[in-house]
Image (tube, rainbow, N blue to C red; front, side):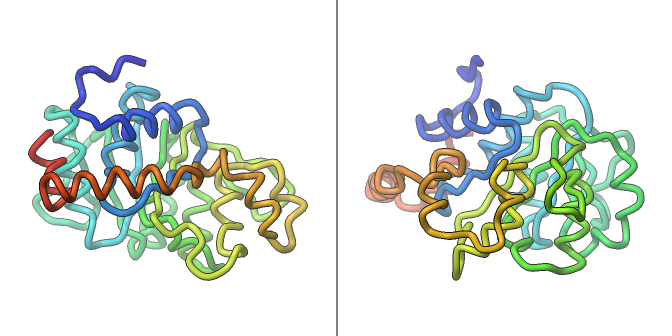
Length: 228
């Protein structure tokens, strides 16, 4: 995978390769390290054609549209429910969690090449919102069935386990991890064995890198926008 045409930090290039290699995966980098950019580039490289869906909180919809066009200036982006940011036959579709139920039938009918969920810890609990997301990415109600649907599913969250190990369960189901059918309780021992899959390891390196970037230029996100 040639990433030389993108303006990336080394940890971002590693994250992109991780996502593309696994297909269904959780990216749990700390806030400000560019998870959005990594997901967009990974989808551009691993699925250069076909429709892509980004699910995010309403406050991040326009940021997603901007980031997509920073990576691909010619990309057509349809931001559902936002006047002035809608497009027909767009490759990229952005929708917020609150509108999923209203557009569920339409979104489930599209053969997505890839789906990315931002702030993926939103689906940690059982709810209508979680159910809609899981259906779009091909996760069956039965916890014993392997997921179908989009070959690329990226879950982005800086807090994959906000309160307790159990919070990871739906995220692991979304990745199709083989241990999920046996899980009634996600135990810390199992989480340690899953660390490579979740890319939760090496936190110290990422935190050190972020501290370096802050020391060199203040706001990390602003630095990344200047580099793009």
